[in-house]
Each structure stands twice: as structure tokens, then as C-alpha cells.
Image (cartoon, rainbow, N blue to C red):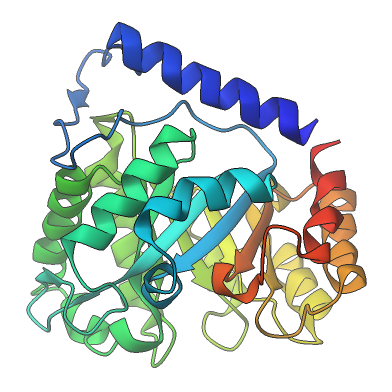
Length: 302
């Protein structure tokens, strides 16, 4: 069950931290990732099998709580397996920056990465979001995209993130987003452990037929299914050929999914359709670890 799974994951992290061996040695042709610079980081956790239950932690939610409380918060909720943390931004020439995103700087990155890894959660940094995607059309063009990819690799190496999640919300250029997905896949392929790659998408931002072409380069689509048309959104991507096991159904804790029944309906759909899991927006919408909506997640793990 959920509690036992979380306990096993925590014990695994403690064990491998003591022995100093957190992941298998890189295979032939793979490049081991460098040691991150965040003090206290035990290193990348073991991969998490399906189902995924992703908690989104934007910078403003993190700022509302003492950074030292992050571990206690995630342990107490007991229903998440991954963290999306963000967002960072890109300059027009493809440089990666905190400026313009939701994170205030390196202290927030390190606090979240260390807390997540101590609990066995992979944590991905988000590129873009509502305030960080203003320059993505320029940053992902043929002139600047290589710099953006290299900058993202350097960023996750520096802070120990386990991957990148792209949240291009406004004025998406589909062919450039697809090119970014492909280039990141190549950049990540020879890294050990291989960083994860996900993309936020909705029918309003990315045509499902475009998203279907991202596989198998992509680990998952985080479906922005936060409105009353969530079932139609899901079916549109499934009908276009996106594998069910590559979709995380969006739960809008701060948008429309305000009751336990709302959340349970999406959990039931994720289980029935064999989805990879769910993505929940966002942690700040939970008043406490006793929020009654958290109970509705448990069938995902049964």
C-alpha cells in the first residue's frame, strides 16, 4: 500500500546513502552524471515504476512554507511519487535563467532537490509556465535551440534534478517544441541515469496529432485536464495515438477539482484506461496533509 511503498523508498535511500552507491554504474557509452552541488543531496533515487503521481511545486508555494518543512510535507501527504519544480525560463538566445520564472534562485532549487531525494522522489525542473515561456519561440528556433538544450543539461547537472518538464503555455510553435523534445532526447540518451522528459499539453496548446509524434522520445505528457472538459481532452490524445501509459491525467487542486469526488473521478479514469498516472496542480492548494482529497488518490496504488 501507499505507506509501505513510501517507507520502502525511504529505507532504500537511507541504505544507498550509507553505502555511497545510489545507482548502477553507467553502461558502455554512457556518461555518468556529475555530482550536484547542493549540500546534503543523497543523489538520484531509483526509477519509479507505474503508476506515477506527480506533485507540482511552484516557487510561490515553496516560499509559503519553511524550506525545512518540505520533507515533512511530502511524507505526510503519502500519495505522490514525483515532483515537478519550477519554473525557470529561457532568454531569447537560449540561455537558461531564473529571471522571469517562478523560482527565486539556487536556494529554492537545492532545498527542493534535497528534500525530494531524501524521500526517494525524482524531481524535474519545469521550463516555462505562465511567466517563463515568453521567449521560448526565439529560444527554440534553429539558431538558439542547441544553446538551450546545453543549458538545460548543465542546469540539471548543477542542481541534481532528475529531468526536465516543458511547460510552453502560450503561443506554442509546434514544430519547434517537437524539435526541442527530439534534441533533449538525444542529449539525455547517453547520460546515466538518463534524465526524465515530460511536456505539459492541452488541446488548446498542442494538437494531439503533434503530441503523438513525440513518442518514444518522451517519458510522459502531463495533460492539462483541469477543466470540465477533461474527459474530452483525454480521449482526444488517446484517439490521436498517444500511448495511455505515457499520459499523466491532470488534477486541478487549485482549479476545478475541489472535492474528494472530483479527484476520485480522475483517479478512477487513470486506473481504468491504464494511464501512467496523474499530475496534480498544485501543492499550495492543499490546506494541510489532512486535506480530504488526498484519500481519493489511494486507489491509484492498489
